[in-house]
Amino acid sequence: MTPVAAPARLSRSALGLPMPPERIVHFGLGAFHRAHQAWYTARASDAAEWGIVAFTGRSRDLVDRLRPQDGLYTLVERGVDGDRCEVVPSIVRIESGDDVPAFVAAVADPAVVILTLTMTESGYRLGADGTPDLSDPVVAADVALLSEAFTTGSADAARPGTAMARILLGLDARRRAGAGSIAVVPCDNLPDNGGKFRRALVDLAERTSRELPAWLATKVSVVSTSIDRITPAIDGTVESLAVAEAARWTDAAPVVTEPFSDWVLEGAFPAGRPDWESAGARFVDELAPWENRKLWMLNGAHTVLAALGQVRGHANVNSAIVDPVCRDAVEALWDDDARQLPEFDLADYRAALLERFGNPRIEHRLAQIAQDSTTKMRLRIVPVALAELADGRTAHGCATAVAAWVLGVRAGLVPSPDGVGEHADAGDDPPSSATLLDLLDPRLAAHTTFAGLVLAACADLSAPWDFERRLRHVP
Ligand SMILES: NC(=O)c1ccc[n+]([C@@H]2O[C@H](COP(=O)([O-])OP(=O)(O)OC[C@H]3O[C@@H](n4cnc5c(N)ncnc54)[C@H](O)[C@@H]3O)[C@@H](O)[C@H]2O)c1
Ligand SMILES: O=P(O)(O)OC[C@@H](O)[C@@H](O)[C@H](O)[C@H](O)CO
Image 1 (cartoon, protein in one colour):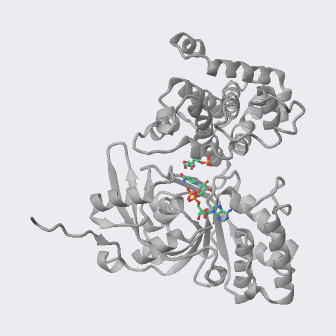
Image 2 (cartoon, helix red, strand yellow):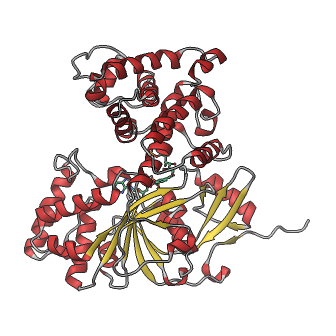
Image 3 (tube, protein in one colour):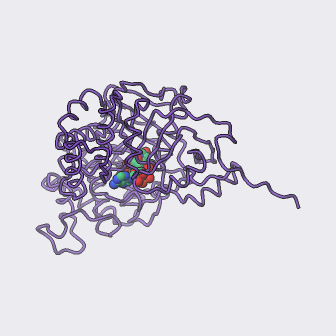
């Protein structure tokens, strides 16, 4: 029997890959950063000049997987017809997020001119007014700790627990080192992610330091972004085996993503940046329409599918979107969205979304997407509903989307909104549709026509689907 050669372990020397210099720091290393910003950086025409020092968020798992393979990993682009594997070499050093001295030193390094972030909404720890949530004991403890450290000149010994406090500590070290301007690039799915980050950072600086607010105003540019590439959480072990078979090298931390990707940015990079346009990124003067299109249409539809799809027995996006009831609900939502996005001709965008959602080889679990659905509904559906009503229309698509969420909550498949127990109509189990609408947004609940449409849509979505019913919906 011929012995089978063991697959080679990923390494820069084996693949002849150079080490670009450290000029970008990333906080919140996960699947998405590796499928998106690290990939754009590796594909830029000047990739040889831009290496990334990546810090994990809360666990050191990826440090242990990626360090032995020199930060390299396989990006598996999972198309409808097959996989395309590519080794991404832009991450040159991996550190654990809780190594505060290493993070502070990296941010203070004069060679570093960009800090990118993917730490999920929870990582920002914001209250309802967008400032740091001081009712959170960890945030309050960090405010006290930073105030003390900045006042007594003991910042080098400080070990804050939250990401925002660590970032401010890093920026303070950069100020003291005279290391110059830096651009911070939040890449989380939040409306106005740059504005939110800046307001939170400035608020924290004003509470804790006399010098930092003025320095931040002149030396820190915050860039807002719309980021898009469907990259579900995966079972790393299963994918590692698949990669070893397909690519003939072992990889302890591959990433599976879709072939599509998009990155739109608004803001300045005072000390330079990679030529990300050469890899397909776009720089615009006003991000809002691009961001609204992506968050309302892609993420809004995902939020609807997470509720209605599970109610109808689906586990993944790809099976939900081919169910006519789910598909009709998504199309109706997109009709409302389109009227609020007059800047765009959306025919191709809608067709592409349907194709992306339908990719049978991407396993995107609805239960994963359903997390924190109430907040997502408030950010992705409610603004469109209010705008449609203000324009004198019915917001029929949004009413259907709200009905989907109501059914999901009532079925226990989507988390209940806070306040169910304290609501005036508390006691119903499950809570009534009217109670849920009121908890979602009292302005929508007070609009009798809209509230009536939601109740009608709840009944309609619960009824068995038939062709006659579908025909009634055709305009
Ligand atoms: N995965 C996608 O398809 C996709 C697409 C577009 C945008 N995004 C955005 O990218 C972000 C990251 O996505 P991901 O799929 O890599 O997620 P992930 O769960 O892998 O998390 C990314 C990182 O955030 C860190 N993190 C989470 N909560 C934190 C907290 N409270 N404090 C500090 N760090 C914290 C994690 O430790 C991890 O390092 C999300 O905000 C998401 O909105 C994801
Ligand atoms: O938790 P969410 O709803 O913000 O996001 C879940 C997915 O919709 C999201 O990760 C998309 O796949 C991504 O935004 C595509 O670019």
